[in-house]
Image 1 (cartoon, rainbow, N blue to C red):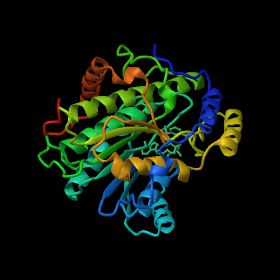
Image 2: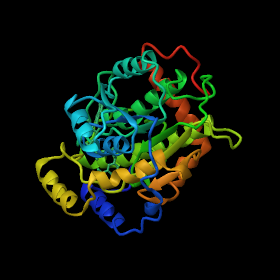
Image 3: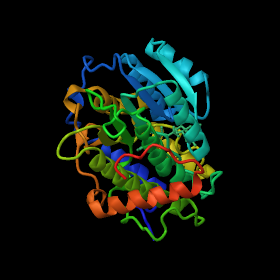
Length: 341
Ligand SMILES: NC(=O)c1ccc[n+]([C@@H]2O[C@H](COP(=O)([O-])OP(=O)(O)OC[C@H]3O[C@@H](n4cnc5c(N)ncnc54)[C@H](OP(=O)(O)O)[C@@H]3O)[C@@H](O)[C@H]2O)c1
């Protein structure tokens, strides 16, 4: 049975607090010269929290920003325009817990002839108890993991994220960035027996699952990087980041008393989203990160993910099992050959 590193949400939040005091080694490597002019950037879950701050920072740096969201449309986009003083911002509706909606969203991007230079997989949920999506998946698993698999693989298959297999390799490798959490460190190895299971759970197991699904996500990111980039040649850059502790409303669904305690910790000691967005901008825009792949940043520090995320056998099996699961719940898989199956 899978488990995470933390026993409860308060210990997880306090670990985040300790992160504050770590030296941010690459912080001064991001300068205003690191711009996104001429680049199209997709950010999921961009209507609030970290995603909103990333969208604003990207727009401020001159990027054309597509905000993939399920709510606050067009209000959040208007606020990003106002804050960034850029009009190159557009909101596109998508519910990432619904495979039909993801398919329609990807088709829309293809029909519009979009080419993405930066893709940030940011959307995430922390439901305090299990609940299910329209296709019967556990919601946290579906949004925090499976949606990111489906989205990246559809966009790669159609060449919306340019790549060699799709026949439109870009001169500058596009940058895929997964927003993860350092809480994945120490989560258990992927349990393929219960992979994609929908067993009911409460608050304690929810915090375990959150860390565990981030470990699953990081393992997928490593495998994606491995498959897209062979023989030391980077076709598509695939990197992972933990933004550190961020004062967002991610705990909004927690039970009342727990929410009260966590709200206090978040408000007093967590960093504002605008600050947490900066290392993400570094991954997206900095020249020194061009053509890098399979890097993990914890805020502004490079470090190793949990070693289990680099296990090539687990990566290959995860790839296969994710594909099997996807094909069971999606009536219409991409016709194009998926890259590197
Ligand atoms: N906050 C932290 O301390 C922290 C630390 C480490 C990592 N992270 C990671 O950072 C990312 C952003 O978290 P946050 O703190 O900014 O949380 P947040 O404020 O709750 O934002 C989450 C975003 O995801 C969107 N989302 C959720 N379910 C969706 C769905 N089915 N379809 C489309 N969008 C959906 C939300 O949209 P709605 O507004 O419509 O719900 C919202 O825009 C997550 O991946 C999280 O795991 C956060």
